[in-house]
Length: 160
Ligand SMILES: [Zn+2]
Image (cartoon, rainbow, N blue to C red; front, top):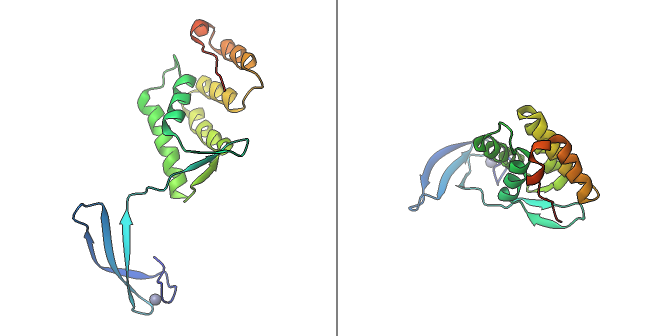
């Protein structure tokens, strides 16, 4: 943690205590270079992640929406709910770890694909098809049907 007085990155923690509710931890630090003391607060990450869409519109990162997309891509595949959940959790953690609170929908889709590819090739291709956003719904539906002839009846058209 950077010292607010001299900018040094070396400090030690002299004392740390949590708030009564337990949602904030306060640490008293001492700079190892200038010996001045300062306080830092630690709390659960609440900064929302914003997704920048193709048309430049913005929307909050929606975990549920991503889960739904993954469930559609993995219909009748041997991919468990847990695996789907962990893809999304992992991806969100990666963004937060890099302090990236804005991500393009393209990048987000790519991040899903990297993970899906390791898991299931068919689901990967299905998701990639949606991600590339076919020009019209019919094109997408026929693409999907080629992959899963057995589930043709259940293929729902995707509206935008
Ligand atoms: Zn200092």
